[in-house]
Image (tube, rainbow, N blue to C red; front, side, top):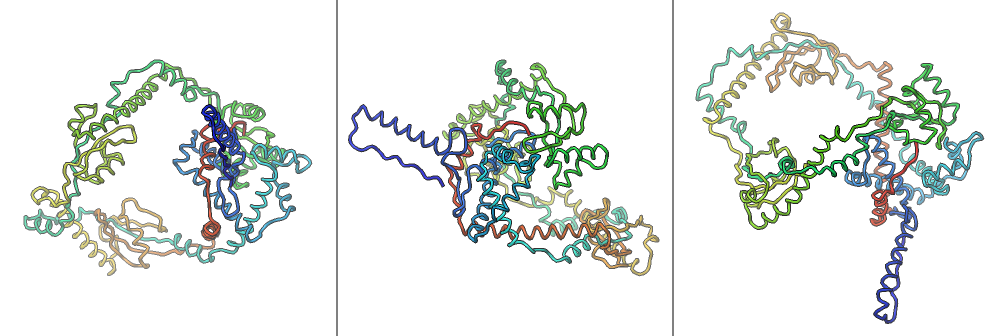
Length: 637
């Protein structure tokens, strides 16, 4: 960790005229120390680490590069730039810190137990990196050039190779041989792929409808008394609120022509885009390999996707997004723009070795004039000005409320409007569609005073609880129709249950389902994951609880019912290629998961034992580089 420099104050008396000079010298010294500590142009200088695990430092460079890689990845994945502010809100910076801390903990543990590899192993790994190769093999100049592109020195890179090798040895020692039994995957696959064949017939509520008479007053009263909880109303909060939205302010917004044209210039990248290409890339060790791969694709012997899969890569790994010519280095741009239509470029020599680029689409240049963009710009400008105007009202509203103004008085003094709402926890319409408002409405009590609150769209509101109506069961006279409908539904379910059980018993006694004048149908070889659209939701699950020849009746709460007769049980075929492949995948996945869990626990234990310390000032110093442009980078792919 970097040590903070101390400045010794001057001794002796100071004349009045010398006090100002001394103060200036102190400020200059502090400024120089600050620049030395971090570097005037980026991460560097004396702040070499942001923290440590034990004696193993977490370097500022690793944090800077790791965060930059995350920002680049997220930008490509989302198709739009990700700012450092957005990254911090989403916890991306913390994710990088956690990863670096875990790596440092393992390096510290490997050093503690004296795990390391020799120079021969490091040299062997260097010779295996394609980017460091030239025609004669490993090339020192290519090696150092590639590292400079990433802001690394050879000694740092080689030490990281040594540390990585030691961590891998440690990981293998901890997780090597951790596998689940072969029977795990076979049992799981057998369970999921076991199949059932059965015959079933739906029972419609119309079969019993004619048997249901209108309820008497006594039956309704008895049903109401026995099922009171069914008719319980939720707690209702009677609210009064004052609201001001951007839409309510739009009529007061005057369009500033100069500001509108300035907004158009700021949005020029949206309205005026150069010709672009949708591009993917795949690197190779040699130009000959790249040329052979292109020839194989064009001959139909393989595909670009298959080439990626051979490397363990996905299309997202190769995707470079939509790029303009000026985004690329000259040779790369020439190769991509030489294609008159989608296809593969010739091999291109880049700083990281030979590369094939695949162009998936050609995007024409777009140009939208100011007048064509004007409606959209006016809407954006007006909405922004309306939100600003609302922000100006917050202090006024707050002062009025603090001064004791009621909501009714508030709307007389401000542009806000008054409204009321009968609110329950299930209300999701109007202003209650906002999570913030719902949370506030449920939190407040009738004794709380209104306060100005903001909504995510820029609106503001102030809320008052007028009354809280506890859950209650309305009088029967108020909900007679609802009680009658519930009573009739209960009667239908009871009669369907009786009919279904009677028919099931007949089938068990030897009656064939086909003779019962029902719309019976057969299902063949269904698995547990299959679903029948017009059947009771639990029908398939219930079938898997039966034995061959069993008959059951299934009745769902929504009134759908069915008779079911199980015809056959087919165990999963464990001899097929699919079964073998899936069980291997199951076993590998479960074994990897087990190893990952064990290693994660080990890593947490190691980190706790050695102790993690972070320097918040150093972390913030790195983060500030992104906010001031230090996190930007240019160049080609």
